Length: 106
Length: 364
Image (cartoon, rainbow over all chains, first blue to last red):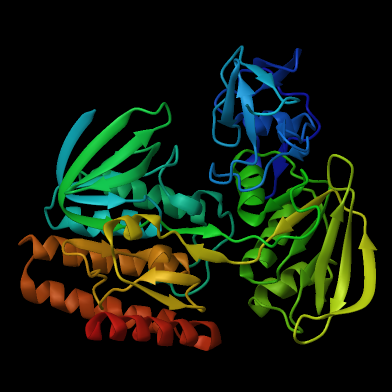
């Protein structure tokens, strides 16, 4: 059991109590290892690490990130294991996943 | 493609869908409920505040607990709950669903209940696509469910109940809330919610609108402008330094499914836009199909539960389940309860809109 070291986790909550400890897994984001909670959406792990951009647009290279949070708007699409256009807000983290944020989704 | 049959198919596992499934299964019908999320409960799973109202409408219960109660009740009654599947089309008498991996499923049923809920609206302004501009629902999902901080300093747009509640929940999670922006001259939501955030020092900026979000690759500041009664900018501006903008500007019924079916639609501003026309027991114009909850007009979880119950009872009764007089009595009681829930200045408007939709259904 390890407590995740990130700054942007809500560890104590007045209603929900303490964030339960969990086994940590590791995903690789743009070549760098990042700890994550197994089963949480990819985007949760990214936001916990302060990463807000999930992809940049094709034509104007504008950054995009979390918007609707329920897999409907396609703003947070990301490349996972070489496969583009994965909705990062609803796709659960798996140990060893290889994530690319900097490139366009196509 | 996998195939399955059921007597009643419920599309959507929020408060309305679960309540419909419970009533139908309780009367002996075989119910299959399909939902797109990982866990049942719809948007209840991110509601950590206690609901208002009377005890019979789940008041005093937190949404997250209500979701678990409804789901376990449905399971005990033999409802088959299928999670992680989205409806992608309707062909003849079959509904096609897709799971997250893209596998397709064909389900057939004698009756169907549409409980697809609502989707959040947005407002567009320069910079609204920047990372850091998110919807209120996204904030609730990531803060309350996944326990990550969505922003250190947040500006909420919209002072309806959703905006007021989400501001309070952001404070509970340790974020700073720089303010709640409301275009109209008065606060949109209930006084009780507004007082709660005001007591904690959050200003509610009425008569203001967001003009622009600025930042290089994420939100760094927001430009607000003062607007008059009609929403016309006065030219006077104010810059607020925040890293997150949270949009709480209303909901619209999710009506793709009833549109596939060919349901006749009606329009109502107070119900959130186009809704499938339905009668007093939630029957749509398409034989065998019922609708309930926010998909039938955006209201509250409590009204969604009652509408779901109506649809569940009506669908089961139409298949010959349940005793006639008992069901009639129950339907009458639920209708009364809905009238109770639709009182007060906000409720009355929706009650009138619902009555108009029913009239359009009958006279169509």
